[in-house]
Image 1 (cartoon, chains in turn brown, yellow):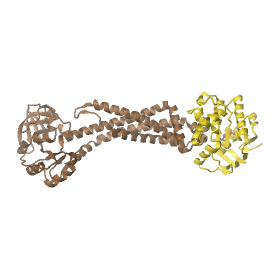
Image 2: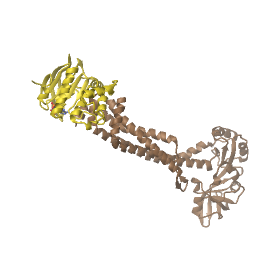
Image 3: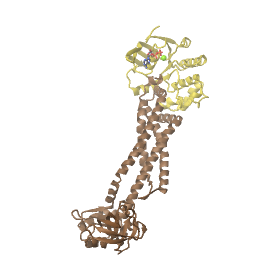
Image 4: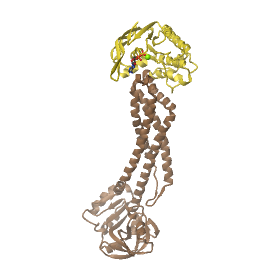
Length: 385
Length: 221
Ligand SMILES: Nc1ncnc2c1ncn2[C@@H]1O[C@H](COP(=O)(O)OP(=O)(O)O)[C@@H](O)[C@H]1O
Ligand SMILES: [Mg+2]
């Protein structure tokens, strides 16, 4: 084996000019994967964090299957409040409706909440672009999402009419413009919980209750406990809520994997081609290697080993480039209208995974030329054909 | 003792649909310690014979014995091992690894054979062929005659039982050719090295113990 290593090293060293391209291809492919995956993580995590921050508790309680609302809210709130690990909770009502301003009309999602309770669980009400947030007991005010505000050309201080799904209407004053970076930016209005309950005739009911625990790790245990004590079947942990966010990123993931796959494929092919050409140039030398007694398998190993050298150097350079690129973009993210900013996130496992996958591809790419080298016909190689 | 023996050795190549009979029934016997020259017109099968006895190629029919062992049908790994341990090859040109220095070229087959002290041995051999002062040169930095001497040094690393040389001086000027043959003579006399050498030149052939004449794939006289 040491002689195989010896020859592979010497041969690679002598041919470094040719191999520089292989190393560059591998390095670019590696850096590409690290940065793209970093971006995907940054994007996903950005959404996840925002979702967790603004739209979910550690545990979310939903109405039972056949019901539209959670019934007996008062008693349930009391029970939840009495649990040791519960830090806070916030019931919400969600309903359909429409927003009316001058001649314009837009369907909206009405989100009603109690600011005092909501602020203990999420930071939704702090996501304000302009104006002020909704104060406790402010039954005349509303927050409207920024895209809705743009569509209707309304601003802070304007008065708008909300049409509830049961046909009732009421005038609200816009206190602030909401900007979360999530889907709710499209068409959401936030109003006071009591006011919505009154308009919709929903006494003692809620659409969802967000529960915050002292320790998020207890969510599994508390999910069962709440289910038991409140007689509710549909309860989701934050992990489950995240899964639905993640699954909505599947298309993004698929596209980025495709880009990565193409990068790896072209990297692999260029490695394969350069090694193949090198081996064609070395036919006579391979013939001599065999003539002096090197075995087919040893010759195969020479070229696999060579690919591993090139792979190692290329991957190391790619790791450094990928790391530097990710770190730079993390510090200087692209501005993004919905998310605020869009940048990658660096994780060490990105380096491990990428290096491993790239090395596998390099070895795979080297396999064909290496096998070909091992099978070289001595006579033809030495007498040139 | 008989070191090489062939029995009705035949080799034919297919050139398209035409069968070319490169060897057509060769019976030879070469004794240990002999220095044999093989001569004959171009295309009469000399190289083919050497390749078969050196186990670089497989005969179409017939048998080859080395030290009495039938080596005709060994598998490719075994053949490689045999070549490494028992046979030294010298071709007409481009024998050396361009990537390796003179010293490394000589070391390499010994490393492959896991021979201890291969560095010392390589230096000894290069001294023997008169190139002790060229250890770190690349093959491209020395003359053709010197390259052939390095090849001889390399072929001796694992103390081969048989040295096979296919027109080793075919590419060299007279002076270098004589140096090579004198080296062969010396190895044969002093160390009892068995040598089978193909040559065109009657002068060079004349320096061998015995000449085997080939004609049209068979042995003539
Ligand atoms: N690989 C090959 N394919 C086809 N014909 C070959 C091959 N090698 C040798 N021959 C033919 O076999 C014959 C003997 O060749 P060779 O042994 O090289 O002769 P020599 O060395 O005596 O000049 C020649 O006619 C040559 O053309
Ligand atoms: Mg010939």
